[in-house]
Image (tube, rainbow, N blue to C red; front, side, top):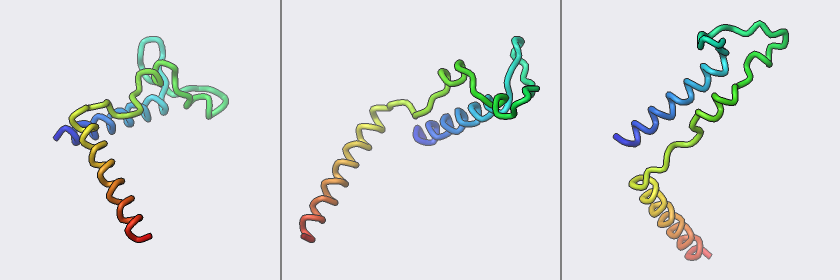
Length: 86
């Protein structure tokens, strides 16, 4: 279940990021559509939004160390098969 929770958190972060890009907020925190003359300027992310958004999942030793060991074993096996074919 921890992998599912990590995936859910990643999806929530992406949804929050998309919502921040689609709407800006005034000083009271209420969302409104920008009335900018240039349409691309209204969709620029804010610095606070960029700094608070997590772009990669957190490092969880129980998952990531095992994943690294399995990846190393798979790479060693692939290298062994390559040498056997040669």
